Image (cartoon, rainbow, N blue to C red; front, side):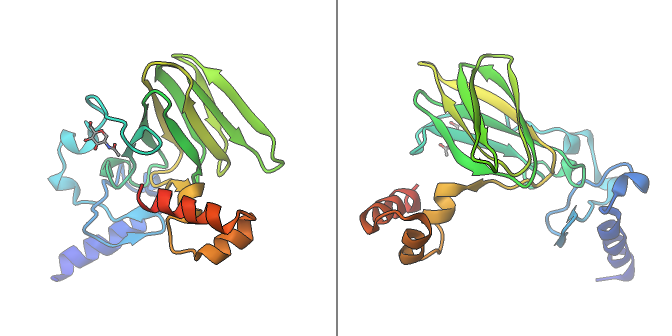
Amino acid sequence: MSTLPTIFILISLFATINHAIEIDYCVGDSNLPRGPEGYACKNPSTLTTDDFVFTGFRGERTTNSIFRNNITLAFAKQFPAINGMGISMARLDLGVGGVIPVHSHRTSEIIVIIKGTIIAGFIDTTNTAYYKKLEVGDVMIFPQAMLHFQINAGDTPAMAIVSLNGASPAVQQTSFSLFAGNLPSKLAEQITHLSHEEVTRMRKLFQSA
Ligand SMILES: *[C@@H]1O[C@H](CO)[C@@H](O)[C@H](O)[C@H]1NC(C)=O
């Protein structure tokens, strides 16, 4: 690697830390190393308007997954222009009976209902659940790191757009964390008090999901 690109990469890595003071934007380059503040910047001279536009929310969605949902992420990985900007979006499609199972992010999330009716809610650290049937146009906030969920409450497909105050907020779905990863069944049983049979059933369900 020649010196100039190396220097550029190093500068852009530092630049992603509080970049707004130093540079206008930092469109992420996923080919370069990712630091705790995000991706390193693409060389600005290579950028076009299309780098700042995400078209991934277009069109219809099928909802054949076990939760009858279809989640389209516009996080920094899918939409590199938001790298380092502390903001991201996702489109949630819920078929009839569809659910976004209980999950959390590193950030807060705000939802707006575009189609259908959705029961949305979160559970705080005192185990208080706040939930409501939301109509088209309604907005609800899920505070940072709280467990939350969305359920299609109508008899037609539902759709919502969410925004999160991080470019890479991650999605941690509780059932998948417990039953689809590398946590041994025995430990899953111990930390949940579910029976061996139930944990076996859940692992089958979520590992094939
Ligand atoms: C989401 O919908 C798209 C478009 O119909 C489809 O190609 C994709 O497989 C769906 N994803 C899931 C997880 O169902």
